Every structure is written in structure tokens, then in C-alpha cells.
Image (cartoon, rainbow, N blue to C red):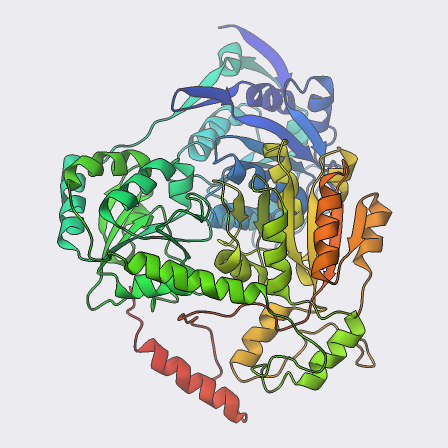
Amino acid sequence: MQTVRLTTAQALVKFLNQQYISFDGEEMPFVEGIFNIFGHGNVLGIGQALEQDAGHLKVIQGKNEQGMAHAAVAFSKQKLRRQIYAVTTSVGPGSANLTAAAGTALANNIPVLLLPADTFATRQPDPVLQQVEQEYSQAVTTNDALKPVSRYWDRITRPEQLMSSLIRAFEVMTDPGKAGPATICISQDVEGEAYDFNRSFFEKRVHYVDRKPAVERELQGAAALIKASQKPVILVGGGAKYSDARDILVSLSEKHGIPLVETQAGKSTVESDFQNNLGGLGITGTLAANKAAREADLIIGIGTRYTDFATSSKTAFDFETAKFLNINVSRLQAYKLDAFQVVADAKVTLEALSPILGEYKTAFGTRIAELKNEWEAERKRLSEVTFSREDFDPEVKEQFTQEVLNEYADALDTELAQTTALLAINETIDPESVVIGSAGSLPGDLQRLWNPTKPNTYHLEYGYSCMGYEVSGTLGIKLAEPDREAYAMVGDGSFLMLHSEFLTSIQYGKKINVLLFDNSGYGCISNLQMEHGSGSYFCEFRTHDDKIVNVDYAKIAEAYGAKAYRANTVEELKAALEDAKQQDVSTLIEMKVLPKTMSEGYDSWWHVGVAEVSENDSVKRAYEAKQQMLERAKQY
């Protein structure tokens, strides 16, 4: 047996360079590069190995461990899970900062390789700097916090353990049915420890992602359900996008008259201007999609997890009449809502179903066009909404008075509505551009109102809805799509939570565009409070003397070296967007928007924890309303 003597970290880097993926006959390196923030746990191990020979790996210095991991997650998501970045951090706080990003990857089924350093395997110098101690076990380290948010987790305390651990990690990351974050914690002394590795371990390794076909029983059962239905609806989830199922979805929808509705992850699998695409389903969905789902007697879920936002907390469907057919590579997901399960790849399953369905037609007829036209009229209305200090929307919540809105208009010097700004952006940027969002009220406006006319140009992280993902994720998108403009749709609350990788984009010349909607507060949660009887309590950004906080975010961007704009009117916004297209450096457009000017839900409901006992009559009424809605929700 031929061997090569390497440190554990050198072996890791050498192995990463030899991992390839093959999908539909196309072969490419699986690991594009590695994000790093070096510290005492990894700089002398993985840092030394990368400095000595990084191979083809692109090495990018991050600014915050969570931020750079979010960028890696977004890269993988935009690449349809066919390429990844690895992420290395130091021990202790550095690895702890990965937890939110790991949870984001896990909730969204996105592969990413996390490589946090760990404490000493020998324990000789324990407790080392940044090491936590537990009385019940000396084996516990900060990295144990990553176990529940990892699809695969391991700790390396001997160099030879690396071989089996890496093979297992890559098996998990390249399996469509269980893809997610793989975490390998390497003891910092072991990173520098040498071992005689078998040379065959470093030979080119191709991970074949074969499309799993449906068996005949599954196909015949699925076809029978569809043929027996009058009004089936196809729910397009993220799995449909990862499967490249766009063409067959369009073909089936057109031939059989089946409307398409979308989850956040599934949106832009099929472009919005397709005649049978009724848009997003559920709490953040369109009126058209929600009406179609309510009428449906069969829900065909394609690669979806059926989250509460997609199902309106299980009130989106008529459970007395509707049946469910789930096509999913994950057996766990296929079983949801007591559906007929097809555990298989979306694209090949739909292609196999097509000839079996023959000349079947739904009973929707012209109803699909009626619903789509009705929604387009509402969307147009929202694009033309205007406000003035003298004439605000009379439907504003009673606690959020006209006087308060006037206060915001004066403090922020704006009368711009959030929906108006968003639709103006949709009209102005290039259709090939990619937009990204994650948290706050913007995901609702985006799913309802944003019309992507090109596939895979809508990137929403709504499996975890992690604040701070937006700016970091946009860097990941730019790394995945270097020839496209990438736009972060971010509220001021989320921007303040985390925007460290904005600087990384400037440092590495990876131009991104940050579109900052500033309403001076956590507007989405303020809405949640007030819709359930409470006041806007600690969700507005106010000073100690009760003045509205007005931050000049453009100055922050300028300090980083970005091109910054201030736009408080539609005209200013469009001009800024056009100029930003001409820039080579990252840009930020600060928009002051009025609170309570986002779109609201259409024929949907969200089950949240409302106080059962309260001194406030409006809270009591909200609790009673919740109990009434629960009667409509069938639990599975």
C-alpha cells in the first residue's frame, strides 16, 4: 500500500480538491472553495494546509462566522445543491456562531461542510482559551451545540478517523433525500498531527446523483388519483426547482389544465408570466393561489415540506374533500398530510406520469384565467398606492394612529409605501437578476407581488427565516452567478442583525446590491402584535425620549467603500437603480418607507400563540378568533 505522510488538515484539503459530482451526465468539482475566519483552533492546522497548497479551492476571508456560513448556504442553494463551499472557524465563539447558519441549511435541506475547530484531543492543556466546561462530562465542547442543527456530525480525535468521516459526510451532502449541513469538528492538536494516509484516499472521487424513478405501483396510484379528481392543484416546492422540473410542469399544466401554486422555495421554478401560474400559496400567498387551493379536491405536492406558511396552518385546504399526492425524494416529506406517497425524483416522475394521464382534463376551465386576472388587478392597485401626511390609509390599525404615521413621515422624511417601492424595483431591474430575501415583512410582499420572468431568479430562505441571511446570502449568490446582478431585499432590522459580508463583497470585488427598506423598527412583528390585540410594544426603534430613530445607512455603506444612494420617492429609486447597474462596486440603496405599508394576507390564517387570559379586550377577541379558526384546521 502506497502512503503519503500529511497532517490531518493537509489531508482534508487534499481530499476536498478531489471531490466531484455528476448530475444528468454533467461532472464538476463539488467543493468550490472554503470560507475562513482563522483563530487559534484552526489557523495553524487548516490555515497552514491552505497556505501550503489550496489546490483549486477558492479561499475567502469572512467577517463573521454566521455571515460567511450564510453565504456558503446561499451559494449551494443557488447552485441547486450541486456545489458547495466549506466553512472553517476557530474553537469556541467562532464555532458557536455557526449555529444559526447550520439551522438555516438544515431547515432548507442545503448541503454545506462546516469545519469548526475543537479543543485538544489529548486534553493536556485543558481548559484552553475559549473552552467551556461541564461538570457532567469533559467530552462536551461548544461544538456539541451543532449536533441538533447538522444532518451529519462528527468529532475527529485521531488523524485516521478523518477518512471514514469525510466519506460519510459527502454521502450525506450529495444525497437529495437527506442533503443538509455536515459538521466535522477537528481537535486543534489533531489538525497538525501527521499520519501515513493511503494514497488511494486522495484519488478523484465522483459522487453520482442519480434520479430515483418512481416504481409502477407509485405511478399507477398517482395517475388514478389525478384522473379521479375534478380540480387538482400542483404545489411547486423547492424540490421541483432542484430537480429542474420546469419544462414538464409547464407541459402537464398546459395539457391538463392544472393550476400551479408555489412555496417560497419553489417560486421561479416556473416563471410568473406562465398563464397557469397563480403564484404563492398560504399566509404570504396570492388571493388567486389561495382560492384555487380552497377549491381543490387534490393537492399534488412536488418537493414541498408543507410548512405552516404554505398551508396557512393547515387551513388552506378543504380537508373534507381534498386528497393529497406527494412526490418527494424524502420519504419523511412524502408521508405528510397522510398523502399517497411517491418517493422519487420530481422530474422523472412527472415525465413518466404524462403518458399515463392521456387526455385527462380538469374542471377548472376558464377559472384559472379568472383567478390570475383578478390577482393581477390587485397587484396593479398595490403598485399605485400613495400616501400623504393629510390622507393616510383609513384602515390603519386603531393603535397605529394617523398621528403616529405623520410622526414617522416627518422623522424619516418620506411618504413612500413599501409595496410601491418593491413593485417599482421589479419593473426596473434586469429580469435576469436574482433577488434574495429571508425575514420580516418583505418575504410576504415578495411572494405575493414579485414577478420573476426567468427561472431561478427568486431566492428566498424561508425554511428558517433567519434574520441576517439576506446580505450574506447575496454574496453567495454572486459567487454562484458571477454574471448576474444580485439584489438583497432587506429591512433595517435584518440589516442591523448582520451585514458583515457586505464588506467581504467589496474586498473581493464581488458586486452585490443591497436594497434597504427602512421603517425604523421590526415592522413585521409589530404587525403580528397589533393584529392580535396588543400595541406596538418594543418593536419600533425609539430613543430614550421617545423619538423615532433615523439612521443614515448610506453613510455606513460609503464607509465600507460601497456606492450609496438615498431614495425616498419612486423617481429617486428608479434613478438609483439605473445608476447602480453601471457600477462595478457593491451598492446600497437606502429607502425610507412608512410602517404599515406592506401587503397583508389574502384568505389565509397563521396559528400563533395568543394569550388565553388578558386584561385587554382586543387580546380576548383575538384569542376567541383563533379558537374559531382552529375548528377548520385538521391536525396530522
